[in-house]
Length: 192
Image 1 (cartoon, rainbow, N blue to C red):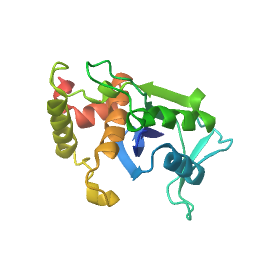
Image 2: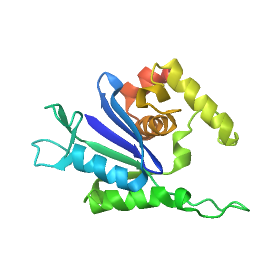
Image 3: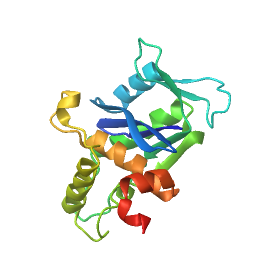
């Protein structure tokens, strides 16, 4: 089965992934600047609706816009905008850009297919009480250990944080639904 995980925001991260009997595999990653406007352009160039026999959704994702490589989606996972209620935090245009990205996804008629995920759900390594920098460090170590850590240079960008986030949301969702091939592949200690 094929899934798409999206981390919308000022920078967008997108992970097209396979999950099945062999476990989890990243098919293609994207990361790009430009916020909601650029997400809209990406969706226009890569996502379409078609009747696909046997597919869970009618969503088709083209990997190469000019080529024939396209996948029918079974799953669409999207990070949900969560405003912070921290003392001293104020909303800025940049901080609410993920919410605008959600609007773009809804405008593309994808809302009914989206599995919304809270930002914190991508951090499944270590105690939930760890500070965010520790959670991010552990997440990158987990991806690196499993040969899944993208680099910013893959996207001509200084980091790959948004592609990392999209990948982590895909894996976290597969853990939540107890996709055993993925759990056995990426979490061998849980085999007992």
